Picture 1 (tube, rainbow, N blue to C red):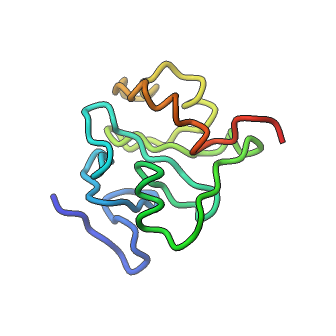
Picture 2 (cartoon, rainbow, N blue to C red):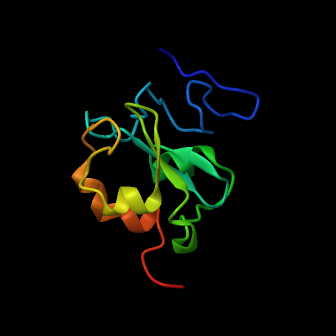
Length: 122
């Protein structure tokens, strides 16, 4: 199904504000589209979810700000399979799968966590 956008530019297929480039129904995008690339991450700067940092760079009109450690107990990750939101802590402490539906997440994303989450104490 083609992407549906609202006046704010977010994708109305999702219950959270989500933007990106060629996003499919499971949050895979033009940049990352393997069967395990099924998360979208919330950015601090705009409180909007994006499938990847490249989608943020391509569609936002501002620099990205990572999700702060002080907000790790708030929803910051969307499972593209079941549409449940996860706290940053649940996602970061998890074992590369959704705790709600069991969908596998890309373990390679661990290498890029610093692009989405504050990784050192403030």
